[in-house]
Length: 122
Image (cartoon, rainbow, N blue to C red; front, side, top):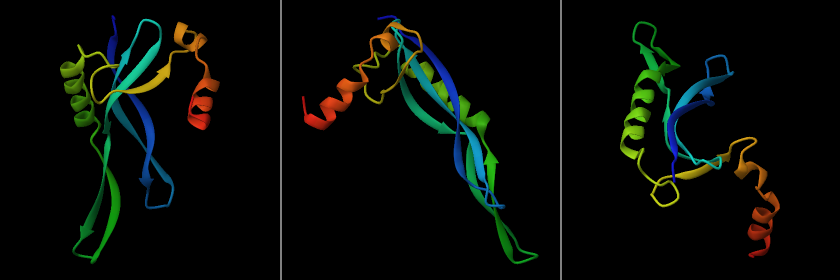
């Protein structure tokens, strides 16, 4: 069907930092976009790891986030290489992501039908 495959990233809240604020990190995933604008995604590779550092001299530890964006992006690119010939509507692991703005799929999207089908079963 002529899908375009790429690695995308987005920001997400990985947890709370030492001061209690949200820690925002970047995650990577593979996207397949159809010519009509429907996009599907596969994989989720977070760009940080939550860790605890224990200081033996002071007898206490602190929580921090280790930056692993390079490794996460490499994993997403490896998945892209393996799945760039798959049909997202037929292969396992793909989920619907979005309709591209101003695309044919976006223009023809009927949000009420999803609500109606889920609510009333038809």
